[in-house]
Image (cartoon, rainbow, N blue to C red; front, side):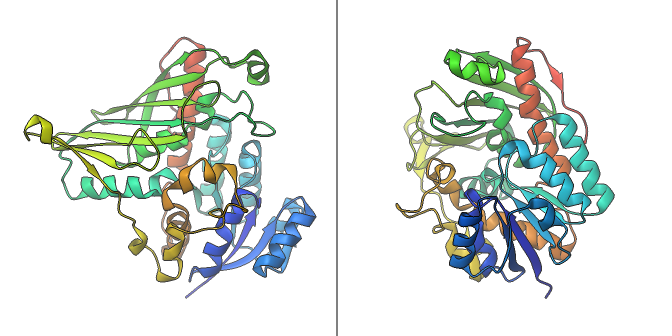
Length: 370
């Protein structure tokens, strides 16, 4: 059984994946890369990883590296992805894929040209709640899907670097991914409205005034559309990544408060009996035994060892080992991972172009075919 030499770039959020790769039967946790040498060595020593780089350019020239898993700041995703693909490496990258539609196109083209796999590591489509809804759909329990809805609301005051004032839809894959991903739909066009106004000192970073952006997505060759909405600043709301599906037989709604149970509505019952609260099962049994424990336990589940994206994200629904497993299994089977490069480009471009739509008062904007 071939093992793939994995290099992780960025050891903030990226450190969450190190123990998963260490245990996965298809991976050799080969190298780590971090500009801060002290942090690099601290994590390398903690996990016994000998190959260490402070320079990304040197890392991708290492002939032993098969896979580069990128967890760097958003504005570096496209640049590093393209360099790694062009150096002949398979690439997994945290969300979003890129910050422009042109960068998305370039990544799709590079992946195809180099014959290398690309996967955007979108957590929500591997979260236990999504997997539960997907199972209901595949069993036929939802009936005909009629509508999809998702949200991602977060208070990002205090986040560093490029985050202050970020247009909400520029980071939309957590809500676009599930509405497109359940039925493997392709977004055709989008219309988005901005609402409210954030503080003046936040607006100046991106010339984006909106407190909330809400978008309607029309899917290609489908009778379905979806609604997604995002907020990042100056909106009172507990962190929420929600995904809701309305079917002819059953519908599933996300809880309003983190930690509560999903609500399943069943058609044709007496009115008081239509809704029922359902605990979400874990799907560790989908995984190799060696990494099953990571659906409920990881690096960032201790008070003294936290990362904002993980603690605010409710642990990302146990998705991290599923993401790692999907990518490695795709490499082993020489198939496309889900989401692959064109799917990732479609989801990311929905958000980028939704913001453009909001700036133009809700103008319908076509999503390019990738």
